[in-house]
Amino acid sequence: MWGHQRREGEFAEDYRTWGPMVERSIAWLVAGGHRRVRYRGIERNQLGLSLRVAGLNRRRLINLDSRPQRGLGPGLAPARYSLVVQAR
Image (cartoon, rainbow, N blue to C red; front, side):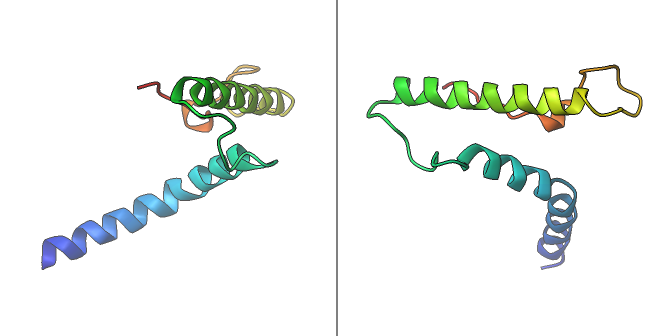
């Protein structure tokens, strides 16, 4: 019982820390009518998703480059701010 409560507390703390950025990234990914896959078949949809994520990452890096960064060189973003798709 006590261990279960502790794990829920840790999850809540982690979710407060990382949840907003994860939710925002998913919102960017599905914006503009991209909630459903366009094709039948995994390969074609994987390509479309990879291109969408690459475009979002590029837009994010451009936006980060146009603002002054604390402790980062121009155009360098922390890894936690990029979307990653892993092929299976």
